[in-house]
Length: 153
Image 1: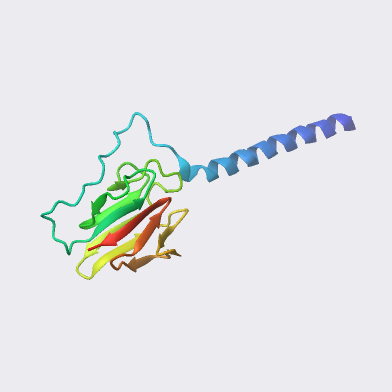
Image 2: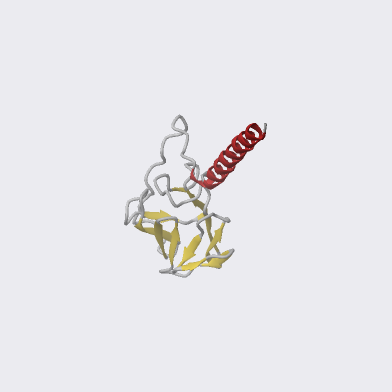
């Protein structure tokens, strides 16, 4: 009888252990979901700055990225969203370190401002982790996931 009870406790322990491991793996992979293959197509590459664009307008130049071509210029007029989600203005579908929704950059009268949207891996400006929001200056380097962008005017 005691052997059967001991065997029952061992089986119950193993079941609880597997459930615990499953929950940990599930919560760890929440930010790593792949885009739906039946969903929308990948967005077009970021637009290069045409010669007629006002040089005082904020733009982000891609320095390094798994998803974007280095040297590409992204106009930062109005508000743009950055993240791995395909519905973002700056979509980073191939960046394994990017969250679905990472940051928001807005070009306002006082200049460009970046807001971290509580992403798991964070948003960095000039190597410093962004806590909430910050005014961007020309030549600031923004890192989101494994992508680096440089602000130009």
